[in-house]
Length: 91
Image (tube, rainbow, N blue to C red; front, side, top):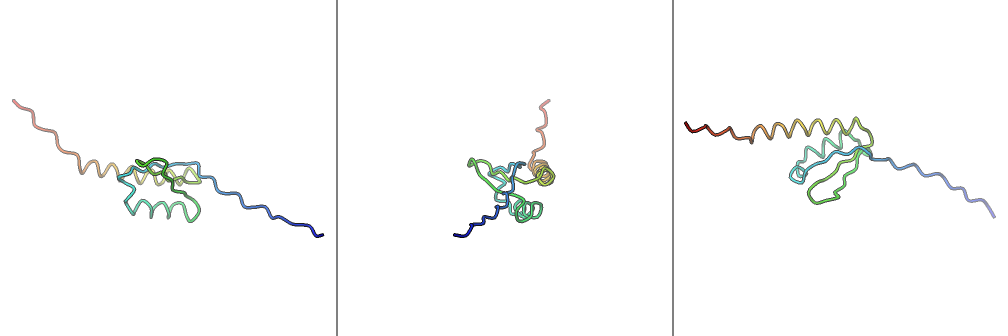
């Protein structure tokens, strides 16, 4: 009877660095395009633990920080556009 040789499996990448995307933002196609560009084919994972958020988990802190930076700038730009000027005070 011959020996059975088992090859060790490649370890699965660990996705430890999370970026949170709100439910209202998850439909933005550019976010997923940027996640794919930053993370590469195996560098990120998408999960939705709760209906209100989606988590994009990256395998390195630098990749997560890059997407977080893009989201922060986009959110700041959206808030400044939608923010209404203050009402004038009554004399």
